[in-house]
Image 1 (tube, rainbow, N blue to C red):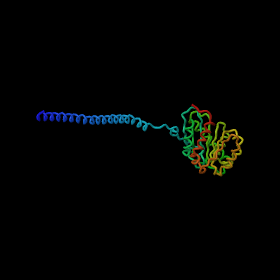
Image 2: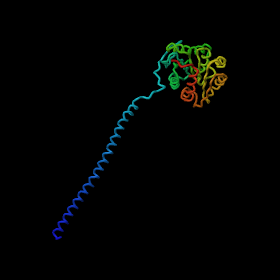
Image 3: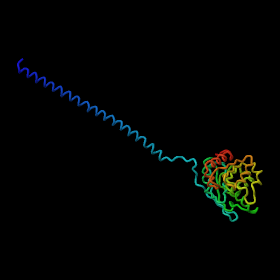
Image 4: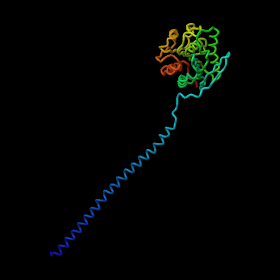
Length: 289
């Protein structure tokens, strides 16, 4: 083989080798590009799916934020009332029930109580069962101290007049319950002793006497009534009354350890309020329609 033929073979081999190298390089550089494109495509699809899921959830959370939560103890606005008896103005509030033939509960004030002071107890009572509730202010009714027989009779008659006035404004109450505080608790017990339509009486911080009238005089009658009495353990004024009421066979007594006497302390004690509501629920009879 001469030198010319050898050079041709060398050049031919070199050209073929260069061609193979270029083809290999082209194939190798194409594969990463396709893999990169494939990898970019997959996360994009996943990102789109995630965005779609979040977009679907957002309106549901928004609707939940807008919808108001139901309130079990939500009350309608109370109705006011007032009337005059012998120059004395008696005024108060009525929380009427929409139920038919439900009990009427009258709240009897102590010396410094006002109708709105009963709100914590009213809210709890209204949530526990349907009932008409009335609270009233009567300064001379709530005052204690010594008084004549006539003064005492007029004082107790005021409670009767409030009961009848409220009963005429609500729909056919079945039975009556009384809740009194301080001297109002003693007055409520005395009224319940002479009214057969009073089925239950709650006495908060009762005193033994109101004027010249003592609870001892009516214990034999109260023994046939349903009585719930509560007074703070540190309230010495109520000791005599609570001792007298403890002799009643069916009476329920409670001595909560709260800061001191007063309607605000009593009605803000959740355990006592719960006990009162439960006792009234059981004592006032079946729930009406």
